Length: 150
Image (cartoon, rainbow, N blue to C red; front, top):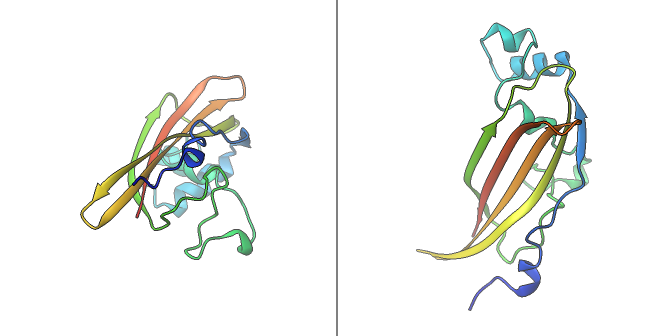
């Protein structure tokens, strides 16, 4: 018997409200220092390092909106019957660098939900696509995150 009900599967294709963020040289520099970057182009804030976009679009929430492990509760996702999450994969395509002054818009879409049988029981996989574009619609980053629930 599958854990994936028709109601759960109906969430595939659900998208977030587009989120807009302005990129500043100061934010790029702070991120570069916090992550131990060594290249001058990152430290000076001329261009953002590869993972800068990840934290840029995190929700800023109060403590009451954090899960027990300190992660913001993802409002895009439905309530799954399995809750222990593990990383399943990350595929990122960079269309162009992020630079100071960029106004970026990110939209996240729940693109897949599927079930597999693991050695210790059922596993639920889900995939979330994030498209980051400039305000003018120029592609910047395409990202697919896969998570596994057990």
